Image (cartoon, rainbow, N blue to C red; front, side, top):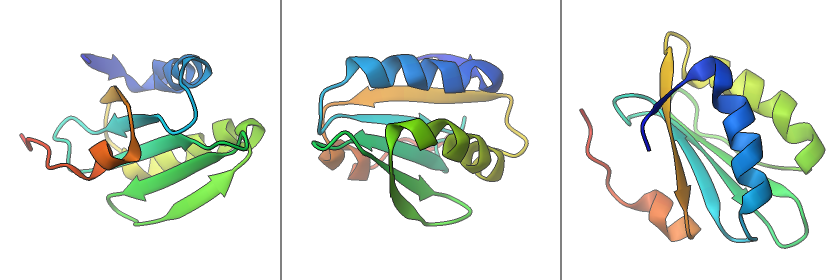
Length: 102
């Protein structure tokens, strides 16, 4: 997917989250793809959020709390970024694959 303005990224993630099935993921990456946040929808309606970058954290939260959590995570992981990349992945296995770093 193309680069998206970071101000509209949260709304785009919410839209994508409504469309995915349990087990599928949404990944938000920096321009250089060296930092990122992955969001996986779980079977019970909760969301698994994983940070990779400045901090290496994993959390499981309710869908209602995701918006607030993503705001703080995006500020921490993408502090100077104006554009981010958003990808929709079919499974968590795709998150671990090597990415081209610019």
